[in-house]
Image (cartoon, rainbow, N blue to C red):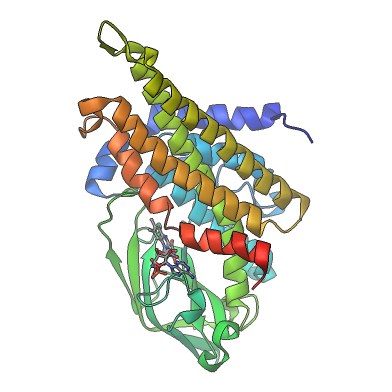
Length: 378
Ligand SMILES: Cc1cc2nc3c(=O)[nH]c(=O)nc-3n(C[C@H](O)[C@H](O)[C@H](O)COP(=O)(O)OP(=O)(O)OC[C@H]3O[C@@H](n4cnc5c(N)ncnc54)[C@H](O)[C@@H]3O)c2cc1C
């Protein structure tokens, strides 16, 4: 077992932290306030090659290992969990095309996704189907060389700005989970109505819902085979959960660093508050959590790179890191006393963002379901 992070992996973390400090930190609170996706910052990350770690070089990607990917997402999420999650869901589309798309689709889309010439999204959740993704009701009906899509996708990261999404519809409603098909959909196609959402947290990741009314897509836009949609969704969501775990670890680490800094300089009862055991132990527990979250995330990443199934490991990393982020951000506010409760500091944003991560890409309960299924079957 090798716990050493390579120089290349460290470098990406340092470069992304520098980008976060210089470019994201000064502006992100305003994007959050306005509920706006920082498109320029996202595209700048694409120009640096950061949005194509999973894409082979022959398709214009950077072809990097998954631990490097976690380094990138953790570093960016220390400054903006919204941008961290935006990276994660952009990758879901390229990953699905890489694994299941036709050669033509790979040639047309992967280079553009790698460089963020197009922004991608992932659309499965519907008003009546979230955790139970097999229960989606949106339909795709074949007419000649096209499919006609109807339905509603109720929450899509990046939906406000995305150029293309992978969207899931029932091609054979009677076949249940085996009747779902994945489509590559250009979001400018007539019949798609986009509506921005007004979320509590993760306000700068362009959350939007889409209504599909007789949206026509060519049959060549099917990703994989008809009926393979749910399998595709679940397999790319395993990778997505490594990303969400990385976002959460980034927030937890940022909250911890701010709490430590403040505890050293704030004085009460004639001494720095870091001298009080109540706070020392509180932050020791968070430090322990951050280390454990990193190790769980890196284990899932390591297994992915080995080509071994990592569904349970990704679920454990996602569950642990997101619940840690919630706890860490609440404790960081506590350490800051009344100052932590004001919007002047980013701590309240960290807390709002952390909450969304316990729900996105499978709630904590669903992660526990996956882990328990590995224990007991069923
Ligand atoms: C910030 C954010 C970003 C998101 N981004 C996207 C996106 O880009 N694309 C997309 O398609 N979707 C996205 N989602 C949707 C997300 O995947 C769903 O919210 C999630 O899967 C839960 O579905 P639901 O909200 O419909 O809740 P429901 O499934 O209705 O669940 C309601 C409650 O019941 C619990 N529950 C459900 N089933 C079980 C069970 N078997 N055992 C125990 N408890 C259970 C849940 O844990 C939850 O507490 C996003 C959500 C959020 C919050």
